[in-house]
Length: 249
Image (tube, rainbow, N blue to C red; front, side, top):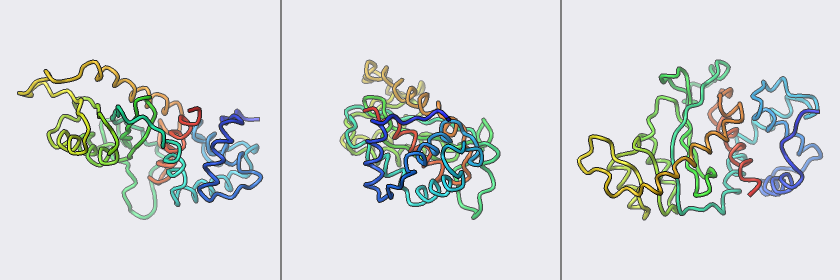
C-alpha cells in the first residue's frame, strides 16, 4: 500500500469542500484524490500510479476535468477564507520545466519560458501573516517579479501591509499598494536617492515567511519541477499543494 497524505480529519474537511464544488461523492472519491496527491508528492508519470488508487487513466481524466473547470483553484480559494491579512508577503520562485512538459498542442502560452536556469516557469506567491499561501500566479520563467507584481497585488485588496524585497522597488508598485489602502514595506535599491530611513526593518525581517512557504511547497516534486504540459494543470497541482498546507488549520 503506498503512503497516503490525508488523515481522516483532513479528508472530512476536504470532502465537504469538494462536495460544495459539485463533485459527485463516489465510493472511490477519497482514493482518487489520494492518487492526485500522490502524483503531486512524488512527481511520477500518471501511468505509474500504484494500482491502489484505481485505474491511472481514470484518475488522470478526473484531474484533467477538474483542472479544466477550475475546481482545484476553487477548493484552494475556499480554504483561505480565514486568512490573516494584517501582513502579506510576496515573492517569486522558479520551477524547472521538465522536458516532458514541452509540446503542448494549440500554440497557447503555457507559461514556460527561457531564463538563466533554462526552461522554467515562475511562481509568484503571496502569503498571509501566518506564512500560508493566499494567492499565486504562474508565468514563464523570463517574467520579472516587478513586471508581474501589479496583477498579484490587485488581488490583495484586503491586505493592511504588503512586504517584499527590493526586487519590487518601483514607484508604480508603491503607488498601487497605497491606493489599495495598504502600507508599503519594500527596501529601496542601493542607488535610490530617498534611502531606507522609513523602512520598518523589524517587520521586514519576517519576510522569511514567504521563503518558508516556497520551501514547504517544493517538498512536493510535481511543484518543484513542472511536469505538466498545460498551464492550467500545473496551476491545479500548485492549488492542491497550497490547499493541503491549509488543511491542518
